[in-house]
Amino acid sequence: MLTTFRTLFAGANARAEDRLRDVYAIELIDQKIRETDAQVAAAKHTLASLIQRKRSEQKLLDMLRTRIASMMDRARAALDDGQDSLAQEAAVAIAEMENECTVRQGTLDRLETQVARLQTSVEAGHRRVIDLKQGAMQARAMRREQTMQSRLNTTLQGASSADEAQDLIDRVIGKDDPLEQAQILADINAGLNHTGLEDRMAAAGFGAATKVTAADVLSRLNT
Image (cartoon, rainbow, N blue to C red; front, side):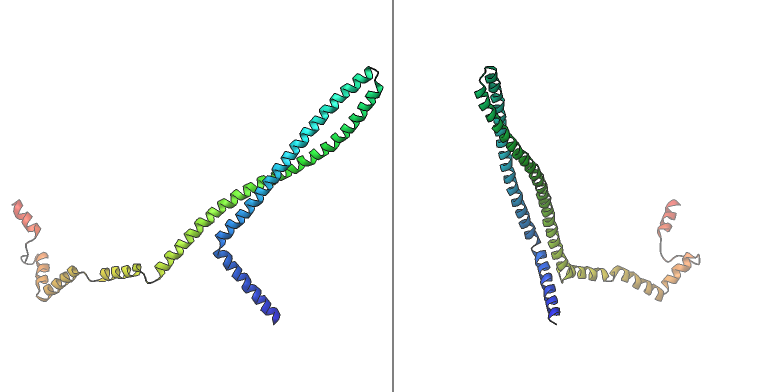
């Protein structure tokens, strides 16, 4: 029993959450876009710091290599001049600087790897934010269309002015044509006093016509 109640309660909560998310979908979309945009901005700042540190390490490494080259020239000159003691000190200094170069080169390699990886992530995140913003624009446009359609459906489905107008149109169109009624009455009267029979017989060639027709007038004009 308790398991059933917990299941029903969880289902009700899930449905309520779904309805709430539907109602505030646009607000939730905008909030998630802001959060994603903030994450991308933070990644950009981190990337800028890594690039700055990489450049600094590269400058220090270049300066160290320049010092090593200069010290090598000095050590050779001291050896050529017979100053073995100075040449020995220079050799020790060169060895220490070369070890430092190795450490700095390793640091620089790691920084380059981190920069490349983070730069790829930042570019992907930036494109993702653009896609999300375009999707949000489409979602807002669709929500406005849905709202307008819902209002229109409510208006058309209810007892509205459109229904009253349609009823009046149907009443006007549905009324009998008075001219047609008059013609029908004239035909009925003609049948009752046999006028219609006389006209039919005259048209068949039995006796003179009871009415002057346009054909009679044209016949007289031609004679």
